[in-house]
Image 1 (tube, helix red, strand yellow):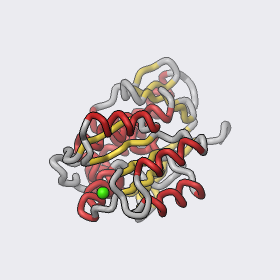
Image 2: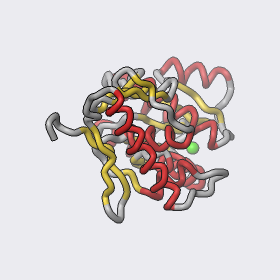
Image 3: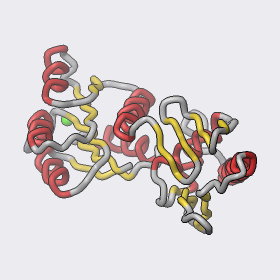
Image 4: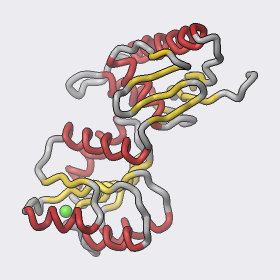
Length: 230
Ligand code: CA
């Protein structure tokens, strides 16, 4: 997913960008309101993370212009203005969610995930695979795949950007613990297990899985839909 992150506090920006990149997202940065407004007019994003106190153009003004243009991407507002009145104004102007500073990065990550899920619809289908963002369950044909939590995390990361390369290091961070990335060979183990389970579920249903997890040497992995008969 492509996320526009608008935050003028450099330290906070760095932390948030890391969370987004770890989640497998492509992050574009803007440090003032005017720059954000221009980017929103010229590029497509799946999510806007917007600070309110910004140089050159206030965050609320950015939000107002966005909604006036009938752009309906989800917006997460970040602000130190955590008074109820500001919160209400933000939500009235068209924010989908609001985080008062200071906040935990884990809270930020959870809100981002929820907003992107809402924007994506309840499920995604690639080949014969169906995935529910809500329950984090996968089906092939009529069979629910039995996945461990970390296998689900890897599959979810790949499903967030099908057809795009997900760096091995990004996956290692996703399955790591306490902010420490897992070893590269752990990623290989989980990818191997996922491939095996996808193939087994497809065989069980006597269908083609219609997708593959490709290894892109030296870079990472890509989930790809296959054309029938290939
Ligand atoms: Ca600010």
